[in-house]
Length: 201
Picture 1 (cartoon, rainbow, N blue to C red):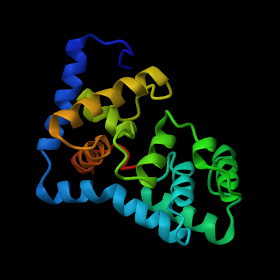
Picture 2: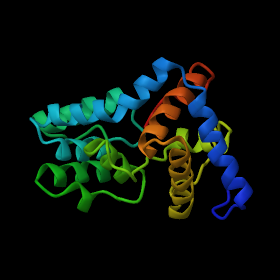
Picture 3: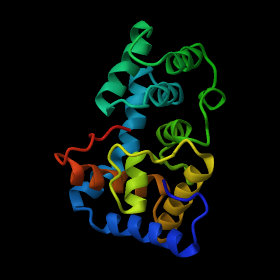
Picture 4: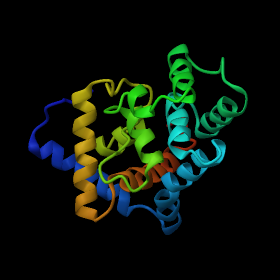
């Protein structure tokens, strides 16, 4: 696992890695990455009859270790018929609370991946939110970890990588969430078929 207190040179290397991946994007990848959270926002509104904030909370709560298609299927099921299976109990209980009317910001861990995923979907123009998943980690570090532990449960490690994405975004003149989503598209397509797990969020 990477250090939670790296040297300034290592931090700068992480930022350069993110920017290099951004510049490796094709026009089509840029377009898809730029639209990712806006499209997810529209989906969140669609599955909840216009309540994008609740929809974003449900999607985020169900996102851990699920493909995007499975994540969406479970979120639709939760809103349409209720959800009593298909995920770990902790996630299901969060969904139940959000569906019962609790604010997702009071239910989800807001400084970690799930909370940031909610923020990016609920408001794609959020100037600060950035999702650090395993792919975002690997882009910044410049190495595909595969099944190795990344330690993203550490608040300090998460904050370090989020800071690097914000710095890269500042240099690129983009939103941090857009930099993350574009580089996510580039990276997941690079590793497709290489034996590493596919693009789970």
